[in-house]
Image 1 (cartoon, rainbow, N blue to C red):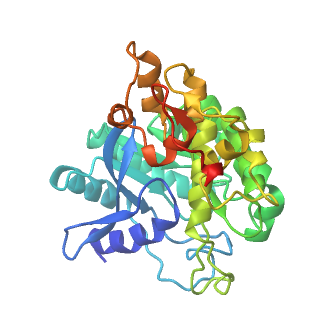
Image 2: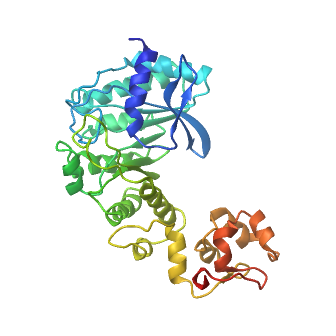
Image 3: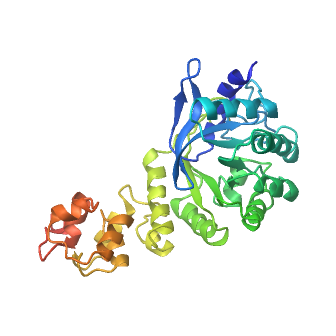
Length: 361
């Protein structure tokens, strides 16, 4: 099997790591999946996302690559992966690599093979672009340190918001030792692009459980991003008969995450709109505004922090309004500044004018 054939297996096997939008195909002999359009270091970046091998000794009950799943086992040689990626980089404008792996042998053995491919890229092939290095559960500190010297960004997937949920998903992962301790090491080593993680959204945990862990991860581990992946049953796994989690739940968790991470909303504010520990199906910011606004906000008088709580006004629009010296005198002018008027109108006054509140309808 040549490197391109391996790439089709291993890029497909790597689809379960969330790190951005859906994959697109590269026109290489009927297409190569695993390429995503993402934002890396504030720049648009086309990432090739792949596993080093799909052989894995872990028994994660949701994963197609789990031990005993019966799939064809494939692995790159380090030289194969580095050569393939440089071909994609030079001929097909792929300017970043997201490298993960199943655990063939133990975590250190698997990581050594990943490190060799990364060293070949950096030192022999002279690649200086974006390299995301996935830290495998249980990897030793010395190898994580070596990876931090090669990687742009690193990630350790926690998958679950606590040890109880993780134990239901995987019997041979220790939440505190294999995962949280490794996150603490990455935090100490400070790769230039920071670290991220992924959480699986399933019926074993509430949104409150997930957002409580989100708060801890951002505050204590200083994460750059958290990615949320709605559970999808995979044929041939122990959870193949379980129901898929609706996409709107994943979307609402991203909404809540962004409100906390970028807008400065507190965990308690997010918790206030939950029912039974679950976020509403509507945008949490919209629900919160309905519940808490005493009256419309005058956009020419409101502070930056007040503007951020208005539905339809985002970070950029709030910043433009705060820095503007002249008064905004029309809804059209506000729209040109980036506001979503369909959401914002019931909650604002523009030059002394307002529309009816949503509560009046």
